[in-house]
Image 1 (cartoon, rainbow, N blue to C red):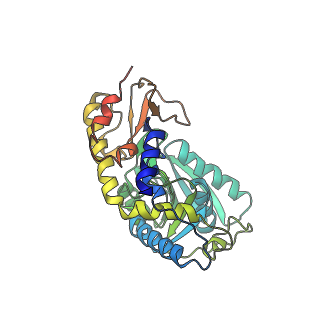
Image 2 (image 1 turned 120 degrees about the vertical axis):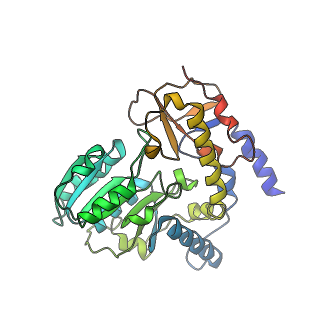
Image 3 (image 1 turned 90 degrees about the horizontal axis):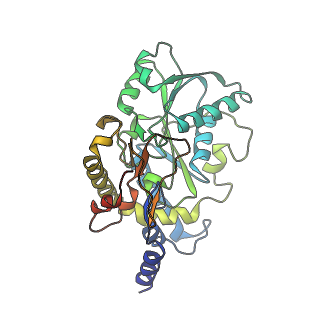
Length: 324
């Protein structure tokens, strides 16, 4: 009865149709919540272990560390604790440049980073030098673009490089994260969760010594500070039903591409499931909320997460989108 009342309340509060990265699943996330205290709380421990187990499967990584904070924090912790030597960054836009900024700042303080080069994604087949690590953003939401991670993985293996992937907008909703040696992501966006938690997934233990309490991944592994307990709980319900939600989002994506096919900018292989970039501006509406990108674009970026919890009319939601 309480859940029914909560659902009705949230439906009334969320009458607007949203086409943004998050939050798209308020009801589903709230259903996982209860009182919690991480140390000595057996119920929370079960939820935590369940979430981590599912995230390992989704990410294809052996180990997962949960951290309280934004996806950017997981990226910085992942870069600092794992990367060393010569680094190549694959440039795709705003979010890949965030990785570059973190690396350049870190190079000033840590000698284990010796060289940082950048190459545009269109030129990855022209990589000549060998690098210890190759870094990339799987889905560059600033321009609604998805890289070919299989191709990048082949290049990395050929160059005997390890692969670091920012999976903030791709985790779960795209395949082949297992090809990466380290992945970072957050609880929101393509995991369909609330904001507040971020994660680092990896196969081999980190070796770098970091002189920062918050940025040393070992302090998070050993739980020396409060973790994202409430967000972990919210993910518990969502991840148990993840395949169902994901299927609906992908259905909506396909319908959108069909409906707006003449406005598509990229070919299918570079189309991320989370969003679509079209070369037309969309018309604002009183009850519509569209994504406001961090960089100016000549068109519009439409996110499809809002369709994930719909039981019917999954594709009809696209009918309220009109171009100028």
